[in-house]
Picture 1: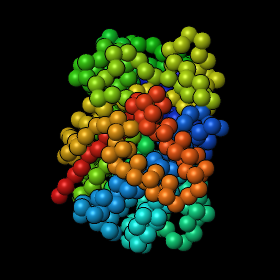
Picture 2: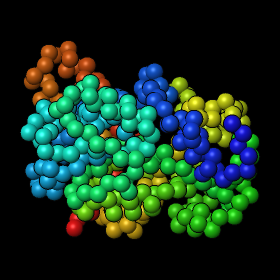
Picture 3: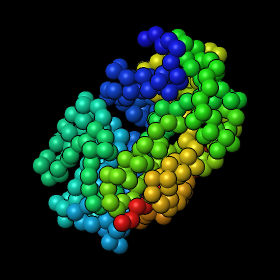
Picture 4: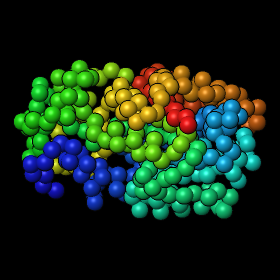
Length: 335
């Protein structure tokens, strides 16, 4: 595809979400894909979130007939893991909770529907919406994994915003909004995400009372440089590497950047949703009870199976893998 004189955000949107974009069709994640996620690493990621959902029901924040909604589910494996553990820990809730996926692509909706049918038959009812703006509910738990790094961004360098001309990046555009965001987050170069504000407003309008939890990589404060990179068959390629062949990678590999969580936080607070906390994934999962779940597993399966699952779960927690670099951010809206 020829990319002639478009803003970088338009270029990234085409790369990821265009008609032939990277996320427009099914992609393998994990060993046979371009990258790993917590979901592809261990079922205990979804299991720990399920345990947290039960705690929300027990404290009365989430009603037994509330909505459990994943945003940007791709395969649907994450929500399926959550449901599997709810069935194990509190099976009666499967007949009362409402399970929802927000997914814009028809092909992925079909894949998710088929996967849930194969996994749960008629026991679990799954509802799809293309956007949060279609969902109206009174009480919900929203979950997303690696969503904020997949929002289109603008590239900023010393007062100028980037455009792309036949895959070449040039910093020669004046953009007041981008400039204001860069100053707010003390950036003289780097990525400025688009869409956080609209996303937060849509969620706030979609539901009266909810908790939203998301996992992603980044820090509260902005990085002082560019983090934009391409993942191709587990190779990490800096976007500004002189050797990179952007035409060959375009729409065939994942493109991403580190999240500035202060920007996410501000977007939700401006939408009337309270910021609760930001934690390293390792700390968040331990606090939500992953170790207790592993103890339950140890008491009920053969030692060999337990050790296999323990090794997978360790990858969620180890600082040099997913445990420290990935963060959990949480918000709540109350009536």
